[in-house]
Length: 269
Image (cartoon, rainbow, N blue to C red; front, side, top):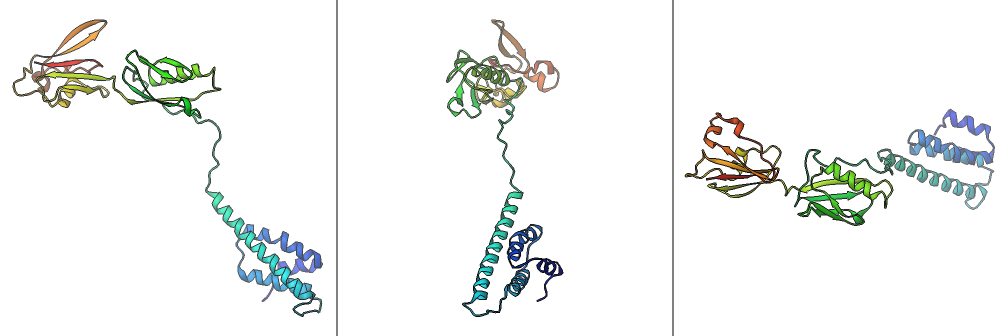
């Protein structure tokens, strides 16, 4: 097998001790540049054996011992090269994790106002002992470790997260708080009277009277659909808002199809 001109030139400039350095120092550079074929390794072995030949070619002589040592050295170098290649491939697609605190996620609809009976998931980054799911009591407050009672009703999730974060600063350095409304129990309207299904209706964003009646199964056969009304409490006063079902579905009085508010009650006589 013919040696490459590059290796011949290097071997001519080195003595018997430097040949070992060539094997150790130069070959890893080739491995980093490209994968070495088995024929290339054989070429190195032949060149080194010829350089170390001292005339004693008996199996137990100096040449035989040198041959064994050289073969062991090159085998170890092959294993090292393979390990290097595998580690390079596995590390190429591995992202370095960021040890900094994550930016808090959006805490929910900024326009949503928390109310009594809502259920909140409160997460404080790296503080599992004070994180968890909490209900909003009838007085509008929640209970948290370290903080005791915190007013939640009347605030948006973003505002509540900011309030909790400010109060936690006396116990925790730079707390990161996330508030998520997992159950919107406070946002309910009610449908009663001559409908298929009476009861509470969850208030999805901009739910109208017509949509709420549809959720309740609609008026029954003998309902007085022209005399439907909505009971709403505003400023401590109970208001009665008329709703003509027949006119609205014909498109004659669209202004009566108002958006419902929490606590509204639709009465179908």
